[in-house]
Length: 167
Image 1 (cartoon, rainbow, N blue to C red):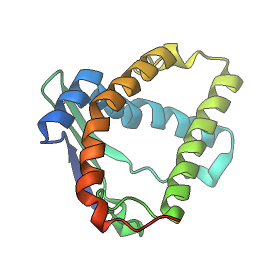
Image 2: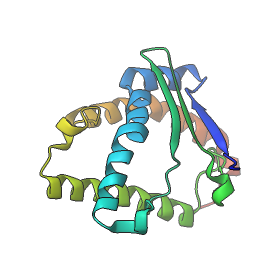
Image 3: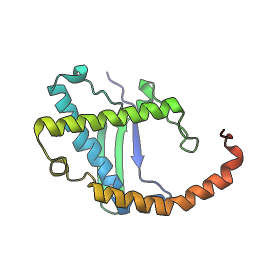
């Protein structure tokens, strides 16, 4: 008998966030990340003899994904809390140790993709067409910055009393 600990990841209910996610296609890119890119990288790493058959990045396995263009998306992932991970309060941010762990995990994924590209001599944009081209990524992040900066300023202004003083 096996027990599964699952979680569903749905689109944000916040209208601003939802619109931005749908407009930029972040939801479909995330679905492809879990269903296309990560399985390919994991299979490649295992074939290279890396990680003893286990992925060396803490990313939950995806059990189900559904995408409806411009309206909705759902991911059903393993809830990694049963493996010792925790969900943090997004508004609180990450500790330095948590931020370092997140950056190291992302760096491992990028390193795996780089080795995949070099060893298999493939164009990642052709192999995984859902990936952002650098120009598109820069434009998307510029829009996020332009739209999000006023919200960030408002948040910081209203939350300043709760923030520790930096020296």
